Amino acid sequence: MRILPTSLAAASTHPSNFTPTPFARTNTSKSALMGWLVALGVLTAVMSPARAQAGSPAGFPVLVFHDVQPDEEIPAALTIIHLPMFKQQMRYLHDQGYQTLTLNELDEYLSGKKIITKKVVVLQFDDGLKSVADVLPVLTENNLKADFGIISDNVGGPAYLKWADIIKISDNPRYEVLSHSRTHACSSSGLYDGKRDQRSEKVESEIADSRQVISEKIGKSVKGLVWPCGNFNETAAKFAVRSGYTMLFLTDGKLNYVGKDHRDIHRTFVSGNCGMKEFIQTLSDGKFRDCPVPKAH
Ligand SMILES: [Zn+2]
Image 1 (tube, rainbow, N blue to C red):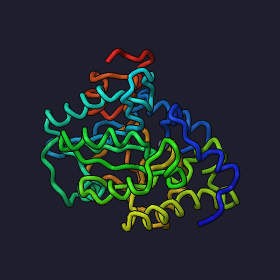
Image 2 (image 1 turned 90 degrees about the vertical axis):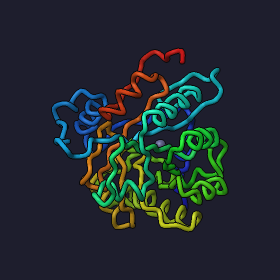
Image 3 (image 1 turned 60 degrees about the vertical axis):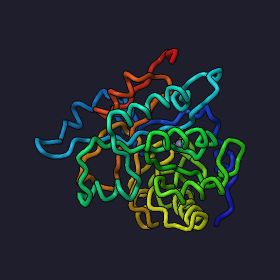
């Protein structure tokens, strides 16, 4: 494992009020703007017409959560959802008969090897925060499966799960662990510029070392990578595939369809600022929604 550069060490702290950027490719400001617009649903109707045809499976979302907060004195935010609202959402999935998938099942479903007649949703929890401890009982209660994205250098930090917790999660057949990079360095730090220079080496370290460390700890090969802040470029994506990842996750607010490229799997943030109405809308159209004024849940 390489020595952590100072600039990345600084980025490795991950405050709970961290505001991720829900866009994908970041090599130009234009593409970033486009990504934002897509994430906000502005261009989705134009760029992503419904592809599901009669008789074919409907599109399904991969929903992303971060901090699930039991203390309602702490204001909800994009990445902080209050536990009662989260419970309501998970209960809704259960009551409406949604089928949740592990990464392996998602892999098979996207490849067309697994036929599912129920409505499908995939649940992912980014960053490996301690609040996962509050998430697990809710998932169990509602018979839901989920995946957990781990920032390998942050494991054991004040706000983060310990390796023992992550190993326990990974040992549960209903859950899977994936990489969310080493330090959660995003494009703003100068990474993902697509050049074979020192910065690219940092990107490679973020991608490959994280996979190696997590795989060694959990005793399983890590197949999934969640790009930090949803940011990546083609060079980074190619390197991720060479590093052994077979499933790469974006954060761009779109539905997925059977037959989709596994290196380009769409995900959608669930904002803690919103309520059930927006949650239900996102389940059906995969679009990212935020609500400017936190609602009393
Ligand atoms: Zn993250």
